[in-house]
Length: 290
Length: 63
View (cartoon, rainbow over the protein chains, first blue to last red):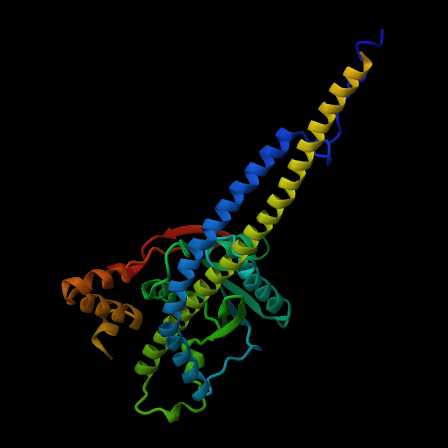
């Protein structure tokens, strides 16, 4: 009576070592080889993009450094005690590039945790990656987001768009920072913060008299230009470190896939041997029984 | 006050217009390369109350 409901033997896990049939291993081997092909070609693509980005980084650096030197020389500072803060996250839309985007987000989260009570921080997000990571927790603080970044190398017009949007904000910030990755070498980048000065902060510089014939109009124009230069510099640095990081990430991915292929080939050959041996034993013992 | 400021442009917009004029004035073989640098595909989205609201595809940079 219970025969119909008798337990049918179902293997708990078909992937147990030694249990896998030759066909399983062959299929897995094929898929890993395909993955390796993809990561290898992604590495080649990002290597070419990285070379271009690094070539363009040199000229772009002078924009950012020029602006930063002016602020240092004129001793323009921003006061973190004031209530209205702004954080700009510089990432891109593309993933598969190691930890470049999450290290920017991590740095922002870290600085937010250390802010004094009584201050509020609004955010501007550049790139979909930071948006995905920040909108759940800080959704209400986001003022602006930008996307379609990272498909093509950044140009000055991109920076101009971002800077214009930042200038047009309704939010009067006293303390603003831009968070981005600075390119160090092929294997290293550093997450840095660069201050963004509002016009009110800029006119309070203590050593502005170092510079000749400065009036409000010139300062206002230079403030705008300094903002767009800083954004351009950050875009270029971020693009270069992203590509270099993607290159290393894809390189290690292909290496790991290679190791996996070696292991799988070994298992495949062993299993094949085992099957042959088993069949031989069956034939021989069958013959011996006769 | 400079004329472009009176017209409501910021320095960024003013310099973008100047840059475009210079690019247009280049010799044809150089112009093609330079015009590529003028193209920007970035899209911006304004957020209100924790939600993305209005999508601004082209800011006034491309006027």
